[in-house]
Image (tube, rainbow, N blue to C red; front, side):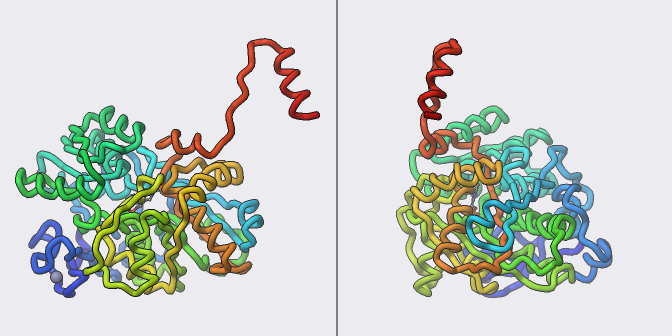
Length: 420
Ligand SMILES: *Cc1c(COP(=O)(O)O)cnc(C)c1O
Ligand SMILES: [Zn+2]
């Protein structure tokens, strides 16, 4: 917290001190999302010449985080996820380099752990009895897991339709779970109402100003790892791809890039490409048609990729800014493309991604096919969630396994047939 200089409203630009308010700009209600500002010279002085290695996890970047000095990081270790090069997939798509940042390897199996770790520390700083969130599933699982590691109580609002694995995580971690008969957007509003009524601490995405701050650590790790792992002479990465629902992750990724530039750890910004499901393409459409996201009405979201299903993206102002300011793009992919991308990505790299995460790879493929990126592109994909989160969707895009009696002649018959 010691390097935070203020919280700036993304609508009016007014700057608040962190102890003045908890969530949004009072003059602009739920749309008045706040952007956390820092003294970058002081951060640089504390960290030194090189960005810390990613192996230390997200709290290796603590001078860049808005958390109080006296609150310890939660014991459940978040971040430090692997970065792997995917040369076969790069070649198949016709780009110069492809890197996969596998954030499904976090403790609750999604990138949301990075935000929830910060939420838990803020709750401890405030002495909150209960922390609450609305979620399509992963943010809630992350909050419940991090909360369990410090003995914090949580109340979670998720749509009743959330995948079973995500609901199981919540219950196993001991959260009080409310399955909302409605959409994620309904759950979000219900959670805000409960926050107001009961005085709980609210982690909601695109409302709590500190969530993008946790998520930005994926960018810090990515650049630290690229510096370590890239053997080719370092022309910078040209494109970062990430899937987008509420727009908080893409905002966090962009914030990470801005922080690195401001503190002198990065010379050139990559173009940021946001991938949306065609059935939940609010931000893509707003960007493509130059619509004002403050007045554009909600859409009816419908996609197999539950984690990026959002009718009214809560972090829409920052998300559009991330793409515009980096001369990036939004791109849409169909559910069929998303499902097909799950085995293609897995078989080309070993990474098993849930639909919302495979969407990023599907978007990358489409960008390569349509010429949005060319043969000189050096690309990194932020893979946000683990495939084990939603095996039902994954099974839709693979063939049946062969059932055999426990008899070697049956096995022989199978291979004679398939190899003949
Ligand atoms: C939450 C999530 C996203 C999208 O993040 P937003 O901040 O909602 O845009 C993408 N993939 C996975 C796996 C997620 O859990
Ligand atoms: Zn304001």
